[in-house]
Length: 457
Image (cartoon, rainbow, N blue to C red; front, side):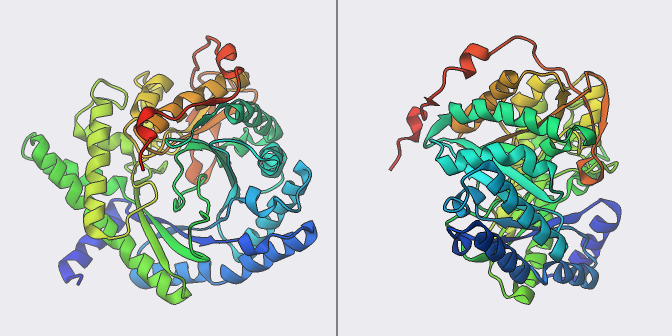
């Protein structure tokens, strides 16, 4: 039971500390839309998405108004399209048509994004998977609201280096195809290892084949709330780690309670089962809504300074512990995101010279995802991008965690230039990349085997 003091406290977190429900994501299975005829498949997809999600945006707005809780995005995730289109897609252009169908459906129901233009190829690629992957540059260049993901590895299977190498080329092609928008297509394309089936956050969201026909997942975010709590904690002097951890844990509990309320209401009103709450400290470009600022409150001068990785590990762990106390169904990624372009504190750290890609890679060992929304020079070789993907996938594979790469080689930009993506995607400084080559490594082909500790039954 929520009492009046909790209501007052929640209102304060919303009004003064940037607390929001970042997304209500409706997962929809499209397995029953598969058809040997492309036009029939597209029509089935359009009809199912527009029927199932017809009231999603309206319901989210009603809940937001009634409970005075900001709900920033309403989104959809669908079954990986390489599975749905396997019977009817014989060229990359066929997959582009399905992508454009999803985009029309997104416009019709008014959602911000649809995720699931995806292929799961952690062990090997089918012909259908490869066709979808090769369609990504044109698909993202000719649509507005589609997010794409490719899962190239897992702890159980190892890393599919053939796909990793291919994705280096695909990311470069996507950058070129959307160069008139500062290579924006790459901001909607992510390469993952150990991807969860129930992630409500884009660009890596898709509806797993083990999920129900439809499901409601909610993503909650509150970096500003945690920052404010830590500032108040140290008001009368520097507190020890026990007090620090308890403060973060209690704050995460309160944030998750807000998400639980929204999820239950959305589930009831849409008559769709509730899936999970994803408690992720996902920053925005707004001042004070920053994971980097939290790290500074914990005690480092700038994100990237010595101690940053330990501070982030502590933060991520306490967020998860607080979340699981507040809800029995915490899932997705749940922790702290460290995207550069979406976090003003991270941008400031890059501009100050405190934060490099190499330090970000070290931080991904303990954060929620990985190298996220990082702008790099447009002339970065595709093999270098493939090497970055391989490194990040190896971190995920060995540590049994989700890792990802969402990197943007901005055509025509070089180190020190600024790139504006707009909205929640924010803006980013173009960061330098190690100039030494890894061609012979990524060109070997085949699969990096799963680690020894993957053999568990």
